[in-house]
Image 1 (cartoon, helix red, strand yellow):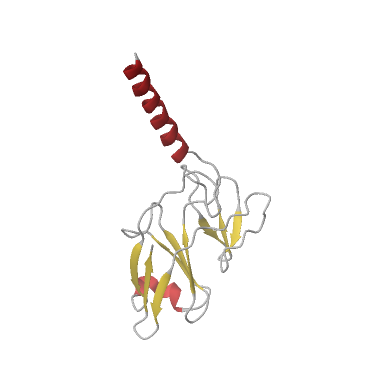
Image 2: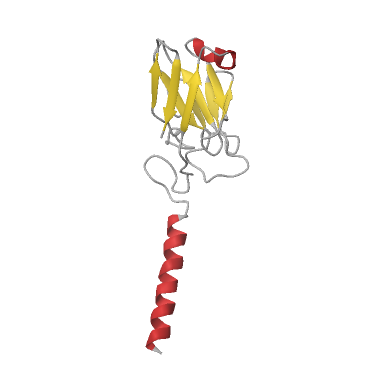
Length: 152
């Protein structure tokens, strides 16, 4: 009887732990169900596909292998500064309608609830919907070769 009770207890604790890990509660930077995937992208801005990133305020979607679960939004802020956003909404668990999109070249929008952020800074425009900015990733940019490496 004691052996059965301990196996049931361990099994119950395991189920609760799994549910707790995959729940959709809030964290400081994103919801806890935000996908964690490796990011490793290299963009050669000399290539025509990345022409929009040659000038400040230009942006592109990146949907290459190792660019997250839904891709990235890369924005050029200045000659050497970029913003790299994950296209998963930071405040909602992934759904069929939670892929962030650029609107009018000035904002990022979540189609599910119309949450918006400023494209160049990632700041939310309406904190009543969410105060979380889109997840960003670090990068290295070499102005001599014009190669932008994004990683996480």
